[in-house]
Amino acid sequence: MISKEIEKALNNQISLEGYASHLYLSMASWCDTQGLTGCKSFLMDQSDEERVHMLKIFEYMSEVDGHGITPEIKQPPSQFKSVKSLFEMLYEHEQKVTQSIHELVDLAYTEKDYTTLNFLQWYVEEQREEEDLARTILDKINLIGDSPQSLYFIDMELEKISSSSAG
Ligand code: FEO
Image 1 (tube, rainbow, N blue to C red):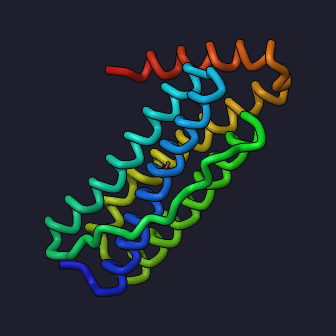
Image 2: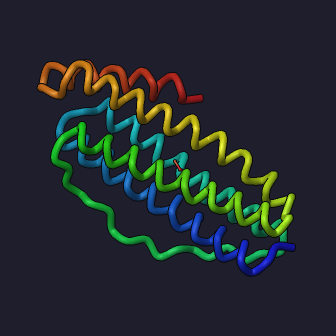
Protein backbone atom coordinates (compact mmCIF):
# COMPACT_ATOMS: atom_id res chain seq x y z
CA MET A 1 0.00 0.00 0.00
CA ILE A 2 1.43 3.38 -0.96
CA SER A 3 0.29 6.89 -0.01
CA LYS A 4 -1.58 9.11 -2.44
CA GLU A 5 1.42 11.41 -2.54
CA ILE A 6 3.81 8.63 -3.52
CA GLU A 7 1.30 7.42 -6.09
CA LYS A 8 1.13 10.91 -7.59
CA ALA A 9 4.92 11.22 -7.71
CA LEU A 10 5.25 7.77 -9.31
CA ASN A 11 2.69 8.76 -11.94
CA ASN A 12 4.74 11.87 -12.63
CA GLN A 13 7.76 9.60 -13.10
CA ILE A 14 5.75 7.42 -15.52
CA SER A 15 5.08 10.56 -17.53
CA LEU A 16 8.78 11.57 -17.61
CA GLU A 17 9.91 8.09 -18.69
CA GLY A 18 7.16 7.99 -21.33
CA TYR A 19 8.25 11.37 -22.69
CA ALA A 20 11.89 10.18 -22.77
CA SER A 21 10.81 7.18 -24.85
CA HIS A 22 8.97 9.47 -27.31
CA LEU A 23 11.81 12.00 -27.42
CA TYR A 24 14.45 9.36 -28.18
CA LEU A 25 12.24 7.81 -30.86
CA SER A 26 11.92 11.22 -32.48
CA MET A 27 15.69 11.70 -32.24
CA ALA A 28 16.22 8.26 -33.84
CA SER A 29 13.93 9.19 -36.69
CA TRP A 30 15.76 12.49 -37.30
CA CYS A 31 19.14 10.67 -37.30
CA ASP A 32 17.72 8.30 -39.89
CA THR A 33 16.95 11.27 -42.18
CA GLN A 34 20.60 12.34 -41.80
CA GLY A 35 21.94 8.92 -42.81
CA LEU A 36 23.24 8.28 -39.29
CA THR A 37 22.18 4.67 -38.90
CA GLY A 38 24.41 3.99 -35.87
CA CYS A 39 22.90 6.94 -33.98
CA LYS A 40 19.47 5.77 -35.05
CA SER A 41 19.98 2.23 -33.66
CA PHE A 42 21.41 3.58 -30.43
CA LEU A 43 18.47 5.95 -29.94
CA MET A 44 15.89 3.29 -30.84
CA ASP A 45 17.42 1.11 -28.10
CA GLN A 46 17.28 4.02 -25.65
CA SER A 47 13.65 4.65 -26.56
CA ASP A 48 12.80 0.99 -25.86
CA GLU A 49 14.66 1.14 -22.55
CA GLU A 50 12.67 4.18 -21.46
CA ARG A 51 9.43 2.38 -22.20
CA VAL A 52 10.66 -0.47 -19.98
CA HIS A 53 11.44 2.07 -17.23
CA MET A 54 7.87 3.34 -17.53
CA LEU A 55 6.36 -0.16 -17.48
CA LYS A 56 8.33 -1.16 -14.39
CA ILE A 57 6.55 1.60 -12.47
CA PHE A 58 3.16 0.34 -13.69
CA GLU A 59 4.07 -3.14 -12.43
CA TYR A 60 5.22 -1.77 -9.11
CA MET A 61 2.00 0.23 -8.72
CA SER A 62 0.01 -2.91 -9.35
CA GLU A 63 1.93 -4.77 -6.65
CA VAL A 64 1.43 -2.10 -4.00
CA ASP A 65 -2.22 -1.34 -4.68
CA GLY A 66 -1.52 1.89 -6.54
CA HIS A 67 -3.01 3.07 -9.81
CA GLY A 68 -0.59 3.71 -12.67
CA ILE A 69 -2.01 6.29 -15.06
CA THR A 70 -1.19 6.18 -18.76
CA PRO A 71 0.20 9.65 -19.36
CA GLU A 72 -0.67 12.18 -21.99
CA ILE A 73 2.59 12.66 -23.87
CA LYS A 74 3.36 15.94 -25.57
CA GLN A 75 4.89 15.82 -29.01
CA PRO A 76 8.67 15.95 -28.85
CA PRO A 77 10.70 18.11 -31.25
CA SER A 78 11.21 16.50 -34.65
CA GLN A 79 14.05 18.72 -35.87
CA PHE A 80 17.46 19.08 -34.27
CA LYS A 81 20.13 21.67 -34.99
CA SER A 82 22.98 19.17 -34.94
CA VAL A 83 23.99 15.81 -33.54
CA LYS A 84 25.80 17.63 -30.76
CA SER A 85 22.73 19.63 -29.73
CA LEU A 86 20.65 16.44 -29.92
CA PHE A 87 22.93 14.70 -27.41
CA GLU A 88 23.02 17.82 -25.24
CA MET A 89 19.23 17.67 -25.14
CA LEU A 90 19.34 13.95 -24.28
CA TYR A 91 21.78 14.60 -21.47
CA GLU A 92 19.62 17.43 -20.10
CA HIS A 93 16.59 15.19 -20.12
CA GLU A 94 18.48 12.46 -18.26
CA GLN A 95 19.52 14.99 -15.63
CA LYS A 96 15.90 16.03 -15.24
CA VAL A 97 14.88 12.37 -14.79
CA THR A 98 17.64 11.87 -12.20
CA GLN A 99 16.47 14.95 -10.29
CA SER A 100 12.93 13.61 -10.26
CA ILE A 101 14.08 10.16 -9.05
CA HIS A 102 16.03 11.82 -6.24
CA GLU A 103 12.96 13.82 -5.20
CA LEU A 104 10.99 10.57 -5.13
CA VAL A 105 13.66 8.99 -2.94
CA ASP A 106 13.42 12.00 -0.61
CA LEU A 107 9.66 11.63 -0.42
CA ALA A 108 9.80 7.87 0.22
CA TYR A 109 12.41 8.45 2.90
CA THR A 110 10.33 11.16 4.60
CA GLU A 111 7.27 8.91 4.56
CA LYS A 112 9.31 5.94 5.83
CA ASP A 113 8.03 4.04 2.78
CA TYR A 114 10.91 1.55 2.70
CA THR A 115 9.32 -0.61 0.03
CA THR A 116 9.24 2.26 -2.47
CA LEU A 117 12.67 3.36 -1.33
CA ASN A 118 13.99 -0.09 -2.17
CA PHE A 119 12.18 -0.13 -5.54
CA LEU A 120 13.77 3.23 -6.44
CA GLN A 121 17.33 2.03 -5.89
CA TRP A 122 17.28 0.37 -9.30
CA TYR A 123 16.45 3.76 -10.87
CA VAL A 124 19.17 5.57 -8.93
CA GLU A 125 21.75 3.17 -10.36
CA GLU A 126 20.24 3.21 -13.84
CA GLN A 127 20.37 7.03 -13.93
CA ARG A 128 24.01 7.04 -12.90
CA GLU A 129 24.78 4.74 -15.84
CA GLU A 130 22.66 6.68 -18.32
CA GLU A 131 24.14 10.04 -17.37
CA ASP A 132 27.62 8.58 -17.62
CA LEU A 133 26.89 7.21 -21.10
CA ALA A 134 25.41 10.50 -22.33
CA ARG A 135 28.44 12.41 -21.00
CA THR A 136 30.85 9.95 -22.64
CA ILE A 137 29.16 10.47 -26.01
CA LEU A 138 29.23 14.25 -25.60
CA ASP A 139 32.91 14.13 -24.62
CA LYS A 140 33.67 12.22 -27.80
CA ILE A 141 31.75 14.72 -29.92
CA ASN A 142 33.57 17.59 -28.22
CA LEU A 143 36.87 15.86 -28.79
CA ILE A 144 36.59 15.16 -32.49
CA GLY A 145 34.00 17.77 -33.48
CA ASP A 146 30.85 17.25 -35.51
CA SER A 147 32.06 17.83 -39.04
CA PRO A 148 30.71 15.26 -41.57
CA GLN A 149 33.95 13.21 -41.27
CA SER A 150 33.81 13.25 -37.47
CA LEU A 151 30.14 12.27 -37.54
CA TYR A 152 31.05 9.21 -39.55
CA PHE A 153 33.19 8.01 -36.63
CA ILE A 154 30.64 9.04 -33.99
CA ASP A 155 28.04 7.06 -35.90
CA MET A 156 30.27 3.97 -35.95
CA GLU A 157 30.92 4.31 -32.21
CA LEU A 158 27.20 4.44 -31.47
CA GLU A 159 26.55 1.48 -33.71
CA LYS A 160 29.09 -0.45 -31.61
CA ILE A 161 27.43 0.58 -28.32
CA SER A 162 24.07 -0.34 -29.76
CA SER A 163 25.13 -3.81 -30.92
CA SER A 164 27.04 -4.51 -27.71
CA SER A 165 23.92 -3.80 -25.64
CA ALA A 166 21.70 -5.93 -27.89
CA GLY A 167 21.07 -9.23 -26.12
FE1 FEO B 1 14.50 6.29 -17.67
FE2 FEO B 1 16.81 7.52 -18.93
O1 FEO B 1 15.46 7.77 -17.78
